[in-house]
Length: 609
Image (cartoon, rainbow, N blue to C red; front, side):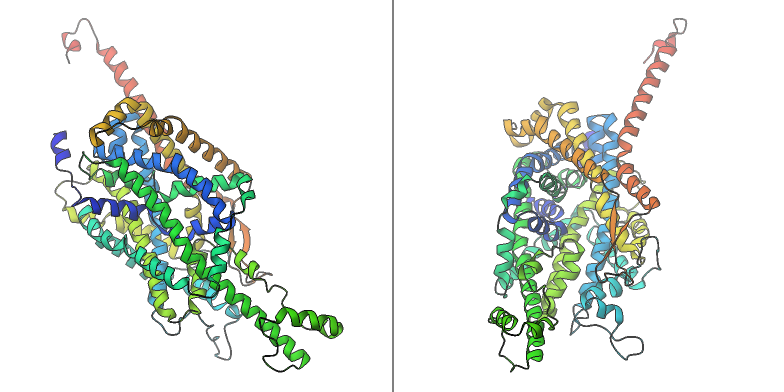
């Protein structure tokens, strides 16, 4: 029966579908808005050294291990670990829980992308100017105090509350976008890998087309060179900072999407004779190369934005000087600004001191304003797009690219949930396959739970989930995966598995990484991560129009009940690992004791079986 079940398992139509799906799962939003940010704050090109070391000794070995074990056993994450040892059954459940929790907030980001996409067709773009106030006698006060871009994000999109404890109401426009995002994933995954395999031809390739278009155009923008020089100029002293190495290790780990269970699920649909080593190296290298490739247009555009901010600041000062000294227009220009400032300061010091000049007109300062995540996509980039000719076109392309990146990652996240349920045969066989794989059960529940992110406080909860769900749990899961395959299944057996699939045994590098280097790296990253988090009470940035330093965000500490939820998000996903092991051990001990108790010498039946 087991052999027939294996034979009936679906397969990819071709190798390209499989590789595109794995690449799409690995290459996600973090490649566009997290990696460039880390390069920016950690010494530009110098950050590539710890990043590449982490890729070689941590990322690729784990990626290879997952693709190999999934392909060999041809089961989802729960089935794989149960097959290796019943004591590891909780490992697959843990992966599925993490994938589920990540999917909940990740698809909310896609809902935000849809909202911006729909508004990108307006001319002018709705975040290019402030709306009128209620009385239509002037501009909205909150918008005037901040910027049109900030106002559109925090008020028009999120309608955010000023504290995580104030939930606010459901925002109907965000509910519609959220339901639409889940429905799109539903449609793409309605027939499992058959429909996903078709969708990835678009979702995994289109972002590269858009990135290339942005790259070509961004390099022509004024200030692009400043952004690129800033990005790639190495500051070697940053390598002495342990935090740099910690962030490099966590970035490559999370970027490759290992320990989610999705890669195991995808590789389980492969034929048994397939070179999984080549696949792992290819996916890993393409993922990291994409991060580097995406950094070039991103920082070209951020350089353009910094240049515009610098020129705007200088022009305001020129206007103030021209008015104060009653000089002809065009007398002071950007090119001779410094000369005139020095001349006027030396010649008319008393009058010059009265001019309200902005001292913050520094191009380097504008480049130093680091942003990542939603801040890069929905604030920094949208502000830069306004100044581009044909801004609607660039906005549409950008948000379609983000949606494609997020959608292909969602396929992997949800496959990490659905494949184990399918393998465990939780639902009866008479239920039509489309009903299950199309998520009409699982996805409706997910969509309902995700409504918490459509509340006024929803953005704060997205930050909570984003910061803590995919951190400690994934490190623990990955560590146990290595232990399970290398030390419980055994290095010799796993080596035989790879020989059966690829025709050659793993070399000394892979063995050294799996047995010693990768587990040690994961352990060190885990210890340092927990140590860093334990030193401080977690905080979050709140958008509060009544804050003294508004429009800067107000840094607030999470209340105790939210901190308790954070602890639960870090611990609950991995609790099934020890629970399942204890349960299986207890059952085994009870069976043995029951077996010995039944061995009655006066009962012939006691010795049967």
